[in-house]
Length: 370
Image (cartoon, rainbow, N blue to C red; front, side, top):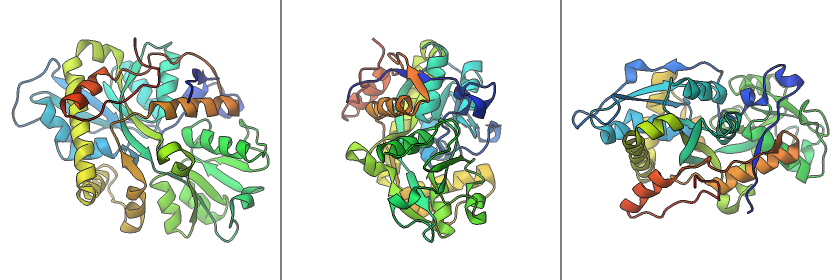
């Protein structure tokens, strides 16, 4: 599908003086503060140190970031770095991770498409590059089955999305528009009430009856199902081949320029991790849950992690065409304005790794560096 060049327009009342950049997709975020996981810093037991002593990697403590969770938990990323130390930090929101990348607090990050677009656009294309894929899917519309039995029953109901302008919010607004219904994108008022609700409180909001359902990523969707909600729509069914980007790998352009060997090593670790996850799904699920327990103090119960894990696909492909389509949907919703995203991708290091491994190379949908 044709490439669309877009950027976020500044949010109005909902974000007060902050630009909509500050409320973009967090995939499945739970707040806004970073956690420096210094206790988890790790280094391979052997090997020569690369051009940087340390590489600082940011990610979210949730299943759509399992490439980072498992890659660090199992030492698969550290193995490729030899004597260079991995220093992980976890974030609960995309904007804070972009701020950390811009400040040099992290060098590489696992993040959703909207904050990557926003960070690139805000810096006029100078802050970051998307260098690889990580995950696809893992987003569902779940509803109260006593109130909503069909998609048409959504009219007049209160449905939560994680954040104004985030990827799930844009997807739901686009779906509403395709139904022929009207909703004001900024206020969320209209034929359906779109209620922007932090994922960490969405289960309580559902339990109290203040929302009738939610268009949310995993594991929030499965948490609601465990409370009696039903899956009415899996977003993957709306996309070609049932694939769409939910998590990418980004890097500071400065770090990429100064330490290309470190970037390639992290990408090799990511490719190895995705291969291990896909070859060992049960072990990988347990590893991800162990990492979540270490980070949050508790693991996800089987009734949540089992269905959530099945709905996420782990892939090296950044699915660039779907990121471009998501941006187009945001334009149609009135949350984005046209801009040039040329150069947001640099997939040369990843394709070098994939080619060496005998795997097919991936495309940048015409948005790569020249």
